[in-house]
Each structure stands twice: as structure tokens, then as C-alpha cells.
Image (cartoon, rainbow over all chains, first blue to last red; front, side):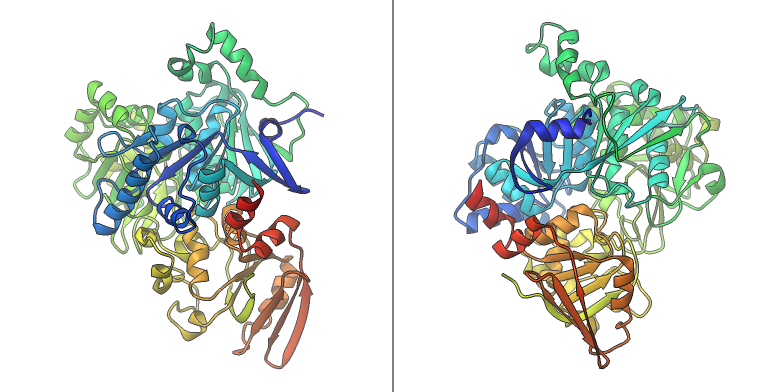
Length: 427
Length: 175
């Protein structure tokens, strides 16, 4: 019987199996941000174990609330900054170089096919887009990862999701993953990896694959995974060109992580998306999804474009295409947070930032801030946000506020109309 | 090892998420004890008051499916821990929350829906309380003059984490 990508990665990283079904893995990349890492640092210091297992395998960024908004967040940033300096962690990204972790770290080429990746952040599953096993963990798992470079998992089963057909005009990776979550339900993939494949995924950019994998956790999934292919190699080439004679050689090596043809799946789901409409969430759970045609006209107070789900250059280009030459409705406020400084600069060079600002958007620095109601766009009680982020829990973006999850195109169309709107008429 | 038991708090809804257990705005606290006032602050359930004595005195939470979904924040188990809640009993858990509980040496116990219903039959008893024997894998619920015992499954690894007092101590001696 063949193996899934996750099974291959587990087999190659196994350190110990202390009990049947529990696998302790060697971790290739341990990522840290300023919200969940400081308590791990403090605990390590209290234990007299302020050490790191390998400073080159630890990546750290201040991203959730940056620049700091008050003394407490400044203290969190300082704890991470001091720790990174103390341990000479070169891949530490502070103000000026910092961006949303799950956009920044891929952009730096830190994730390779076959890697194991952990971070104290549930959207770590994003990095599975590179053919890696990438799992969000709590602070204690992070702490052990920092100290020992290992993490324990129940070996997950794999759900194979084939996205068949072609995506229609105005329908994007965000709509595809909302469709998948609507199908699986919010706990349909608990203790499972979601392996995405099929012709639509084969055609997708790495940015779109990251959007897909990013929301695996919203169905309870441990990691999303896309098999490595030439799209993966092309994206990574600036970082790996010295290691391989050619892109074909890189692909040959990385292909070892592709699932076997006879891999055993927990289940296989085939979804034909050729007739998919742009989608939008309507309740307080990410599996509560409707076509935009049924939601159009619903009131919106704020439009938010950004986050680890949809704050990448491809997303900004799509939204700018909708917004070009138009103004946002006077009844809404719209916020753009490009996910990294590089994306911000590229968007500026391409004239996208001008399109957003001319339309009436506020452009903020790269940060997670508003997505989890911490800074830079928190909602008031009773307000509604049309958002390209990943969670629509009640109060997620501010106590008493409501969130509709949707694609960058649908967010841009909603900004123009001041209410939920179908983007297809603008494309 | 922690002791597991105390007055039961019944939260009768599935998919209670980590934002409801501890809102993100409190993630700027850098000690566990500072989280204490904010337990379940944003949870909206009929008859539930996060500030009520019944909530504040609880030792065990009984709830439905997919408890603890959403964020990876270990602040969710911590806000239970600093409020004296060391065990959650549910039909199912989100993976990260479940692992975080055991990693902290606390218990996240899964029971089939029918047995969760049995526990909820005690919800109206003002004196409902639960004692858990993690080693013996049995829990006892009492209240309103009734008493029932239910055996439960726990993976040997999770049990070892509880006995070791959490993952850091376990991993530090072993790896």
C-alpha cells in the first residue's frame, strides 16, 4: 500500500513512538511570534533552560500587534526581540522588515517540500502549500520545539480533496476553500490532514495554494498539503538554485514527497468547481457559506483586505482590478494591510497602492492586527466587516462585531457598493 | 499530578471556540494569573453568566462537540487552570486545544454523545459535581441525590503527560 505525503514526512522524521499511535517527530522549522512565544521564553528561563535547539532552524517575527499599540504589546515585542538577540537568531524580523508570519516566512524561502513545521499559531497549516507538514501548536509544544526540536502528534489520517473542473471568472482560491469547509464542516477534518489536488490545484499559483491550505484549520485539519510540482520549484528557485543543477533536478528530488498513486486515504472528496459562484459566510462559523448572489445587499460597515489568508500580491492585484477608477461607497471604510513589506513595495511599484488610495482605502503597515480584533481596524458592537480573513467567530474582529469571510474580489466589490456585492460585474 | 474534580459547569453547545473561552484582546497578558478575570467572557449561552458563582467555582466543564476550535492559544487551557478548572469533558475536541490541555497536565476527556447526554441530565442539579480518576479511567458524577459512574478512554501518551505534569517535563527527561 502506498503512502500519502503526510505519511512520508512522518516516516522520515520519526524520532520516537513512545506509545502506539503517538509519533514524536524531528522538526525542521520552528516559527515564533510575539503573542504565543513570550510565555514559552519566560517558562524556559524560570526552569533554567533558556536555550534553543538550533538557532538556524528558528524563525521569529513581531507581527500580531506591530508597531506596538500599548505597554503590554511593547513588552511582548521586547521579550521576543531580546530573546532573538540573546540566542543570535538571524531570521528575526522586527519593525521595518516584519510582516504577517505565514506570508513572510514563505516569501523568505524558509519552507521546503518534506519539511516539518510548527508554530504557536493555528494558521501554520498554510505552509503545507509547499508539500510540507505544517501544524499549529500551543505554547507548550512550541516551548519543547524551541528547546528540543521535537513535537508529538497522533499520526493524522489524510482526506484527499480533488478540485476538479476550472474556476469560473470571478471565483478564486478563497471561494474554493470556503466551498471545501462548507462541505467538510468545522470539525470534518479534526486529526486529519487535508491533501489538496486535482486540475484546479495544479493550475494554482503558490499564493493561491497558501490560501487553500491556510484555512484547513477552519475544518479542524492539522495541516493542508499540496504536492510539490514545478510551480513549487519556480517559487523556491531563487533560494535553491545553488543546490540543484536544474529545476528538473529539484523537481525530481521534491517529487519523492508526492503521494503514491495507491496511497490509502481516510476519504476522497471530488468537487467540481466549474459552476462555483463567489462565496461568502453568513453566520459565526466558517462552514456557514452561501453564494454571494444570496447575500448581496447585506449591510457592511468596514471592508478589510489583508491577513495570512489573502494579503499577498496576487490578492492585491485582483482587488485593484475591481477597484481601478472607482470609489468606495461613502458609508463604508476600507482598510488594506499588505501582508509583508515586500508585497507592499511591489504593490506600490505596480501602481496598486495608488488605486487603493484613490478609491478611498486606508493602507496600513503589514500586521495581523484587525483579523483577530487586536489593532488597526477593530469593530464596534453591532458593526459588520466584509473581510478576506479566515475566522468569522462572533466578536472575532471586536466584541459584538460580525464578520463575512470572502475573496479579495468580493471584498473590493463590497467596498464599492457599501454592501455585500458580486464581483463578477467588475471583472 | 493535578487532582481532577469539583463542581460541574455545563456548557450546552457545540463548537465553542477559543475566542469565546478567552478573547484575543487579552492575549497581551504575559502571566497566566493575569488571565483569571476573563474566563469565558464572550460566551453567549442562555442562562450562562461568566461572572456567576456557579461559573467561578467550577472544577470541571461538561460540553458538546468540537470544543476549543479556532486559535492555537494555550491561554484557553490556562484561563481554566487559573480558575481551578482542570478537566473538560466533551463529545469531541479541536486537536490543538486537546493537546494543549494534556501538555499542561490537565485532562480533556472524550465521551460518546449518549454518555454526554447522561452527564447533562445532572445539569439542573445545583450541587452537580464530578470526580475523575485518570489512572483508573473512570469518572463519577453526583447531584440532586443521584450518582453515576462512567468509564472513559484516554490514550496512553495523554495519560503519561497527565502523570508527568505536562509535556515539558516529559520531553525534558526523554529527548
